[in-house]
Picture: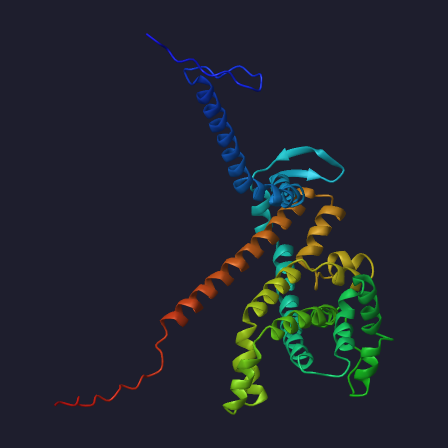
Length: 356
């Protein structure tokens, strides 16, 4: 029986085996290479984005999450600043004692009142300034830089200047009030004058910053809306209420939350305003002691780091509560807006159809 033999190759290489094993090997190698490429592609698509954002989570974990957890751990112990390595377990006793501490409630009340006195005028003034800067003015760049200058000023410098302005015997504020027959006000040693003076520092420093945030949001509002409102006969004030405010509502909410966080953490202004030991205690009678000052007093004056950590966590929980309330209010407003009945619609008059 005759059998066929593979023809000799002219390039000097041995002919392939007749059973086709070489083709099968090449197929397996190709499939393995394709599988590796598929795995690398899946890793590239799914894993690389996590690698890009990993530095943020590493930094947040090291400088944000770990200090937060460690502060809570300290709050469960009695710890002194001089012996941080010696901890006495107390559980939630620090929190229960804090609730029964009158100084905590006094500091919380002062924080709230100073926050309201400083935040409400600050945001209203910022809104007005942004509305003015939104118009085409000569030297608008100069005015925008000028309103931001207080924010760039050091807290210490600003507080020292305002301390001299509110000085009882030789301050310029009392000098100006004397023209209206008002006797010298003891701004530091009286509760409400001290809180108004500290609020003035906060207002002066943060109004320009919030004004630029509002200005950036106003410039993103489409001009077509203003033109349509003007055609409908809306005045400048009506355009501001009906077009500008709804257009920047998200930014307004953001500045309210930001100001709330800043008010809760208020520290530098009242500390320097006290001019010495009274700054830490918020005055001789704690009349303007904030939560930040109480935390500092417990940790670095009384050396009770466990109580200081407890106050820090109380501040954190207060901010979480404010955030939750804000989300709930926004949810209620959204549901009401979605369920609000729309204006009465006119029914189309039915006309008899033509019949042939």
